[in-house]
Image (cartoon, rainbow, N blue to C red; front, top):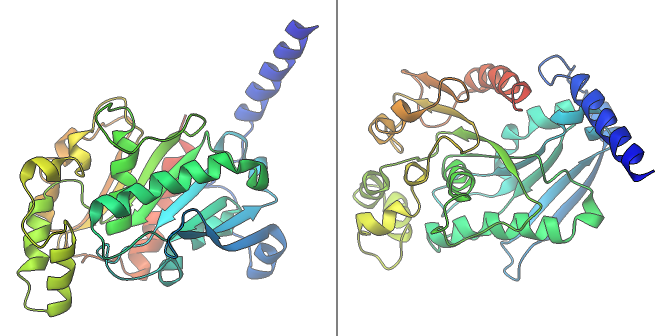
Length: 298
């Protein structure tokens, strides 16, 4: 009897995977349709600090995507110093229009890259420990972000199969892809100097806060938080967008990373005239490619 039950589960799983709805082919939902699709849990705390909170968008239709039933976890930018999840919702809009489950994450600011990075791990572990409340597919997590948030997402995703990385995800969580908009993958020493030596005082404050105390961090310590340190053939695929006119995370910081990209797994969009933040048109075009990228996730 147990053998028959297991066989039936396997058959249903294969059937569901074979006929999963493609994200790139699915129609975008209207505002009214989205209102009827989602239950929104706002400012859910995942730690004791007031900044450790997230909005969770639970879709009634997510399971209809089968193997493409992803849990999207997004982190905002802001130099690990400014901004908030509410200020960059344009990056989660495309996923909400499709009907996917989405987590929009805040993390601790003005306390450096290590603390900010640890919060993604804490948030995912919280979701796993409390998933009876959310019913998220945590075996199918997409981590994504813009700028600082993209850096955090990429570092956590690539470091999970490295035993030396200090922040570990619990069993039952699987990151299957990374979507990085203008986030550092290497060259944090360059980024640190760009901000610390900038003529704008706010930029200087960002640079000095990246790795407290207010001194330039050693290359050895920087490497712990550079995704290139961990990148190997076994890491989840990455979608990478960056611009040639980016004066915050300049193209030079990608030069060593780009040749490592795997032709059969990874996608890079480089726009020579683009700045740090994509324009509306650039973002819309990027998401067309993003959903094709997600359709190919196995």
